[in-house]
Length: 392
Ligand SMILES: [Fe+2]
Image (cartoon, rainbow, N blue to C red; front, side, top):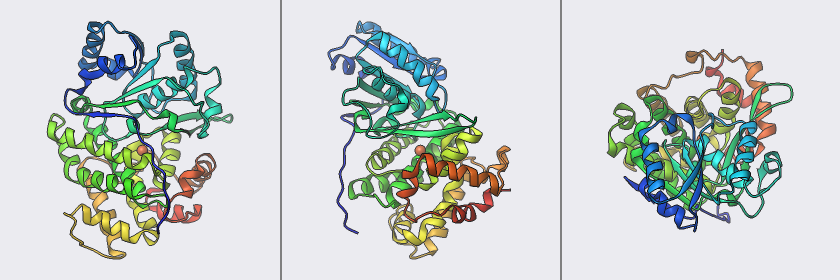
């Protein structure tokens, strides 16, 4: 189908080994000699973080550090962060870490210039037009958060239980995504595997959903090729700088792809299951993906075949419905090769049909856009049927 499209992107990208050293110049580029750093405790303990602070010191740039970002940051954490940035008055916010820290940094930049509550910005294009400058530095390769204008937050509901909410607005695009693949060496094997599959899911969902566009398609297919080629190597040997380089590039490309399209049903289910059971986001996506590839295939069979072919040197190995089984099988094998279990019960999460139905109803209410853009229109009973092998 020929459909009109609109794209917008992160303002600048600096990519390469050692590019972290450009941070002081990047801050000065905004005529600032101070910044707020948003990160987590694990990143703060890494040797490179110390070097970042030394670099800022040498350049006479003062910093306020907030290292309390938890995985899947809660809205209450973001409210605390808002208090801090309103007081410190720094005009540049630097996010360093995984997707959670980068999303928190976007929210900090947003809250720094307003006294309004974070909850008033939940949804699409509800942010004020002016937010603080953002420099985002990923230390994982998968979330793509450094090049998207989305922040995913966890909200504790009045009756108890957590759910995910989204803030999406082009004002959240970073002024600079500073991507240094060497920083990803600090990622443990399981995080490399989970975030790598998160990137694969971003690329798959961007390529197959019904708001795809030809620019995003190019990035998505390149990301899939790179992940197929390099993820196993990055997981097997975390010090393999070549594998880290190409996985950082894959994550960047997948992020650039879905920044202008969307994620879809895999993310909807993964966010629901992940927030209820506190399962790592990429891990949840990886487990669910093979089943939704098959479920979606009647609506996007040609694109499914193209993805499978791109993983095999662009040779058309399959046509029609055969490709859905082949791509699904490929993802299952890749998961097994990188240590991701085949189902949730292997990590002690046992869901029955009643429970998954509750989760799906909840995600459909909280993130309807992820359902609406899915290539195949998704009825809850049909989705339960599709992921039945993951239930008890
Ligand atoms: Fe994701």
